[in-house]
Amino acid sequence: QVQLVESGGGSVQPGGSLRLSCVASVSIFSMNAMGWHRQAPGKQRELVAVITSGGSTNYVDSVKGRFTISRDNAKNTVYLQMDSLKPEDTAVYYCNGISRVFSNYWGQGTQVTVSS
Image 1 (cartoon, one colour):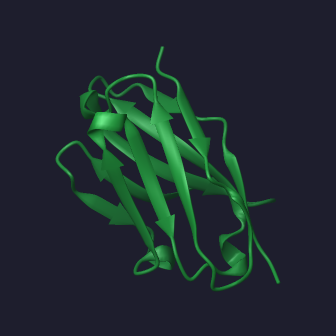
Image 2: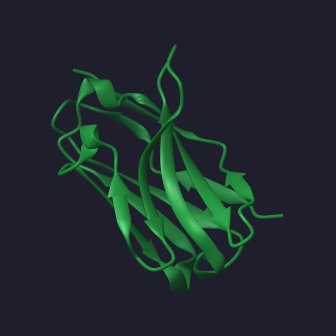
């Protein structure tokens, strides 16, 4: 069973930065892709950023140029660097892993609040 543990959430003012971390219990190199999703109150969960085993990245339009997903295979950790944060980025952020056989794994989520 793959376990994903997120950290790094918190409260920040608009324009601020946060870095989320997701530590996996298995080698993330063995995963087909790793990603970050978020869910705001009353809204559906949405994919924010994804990084494949080959290193390709993709972002939802609303965060392009502000968020950066990266990974450290040696630490089995995926990061989401979030800069120029906006109030509309407020949500619970979830780490997601997709295995080579397309099993889906989720972390417990970490709250990000952007408010003045």
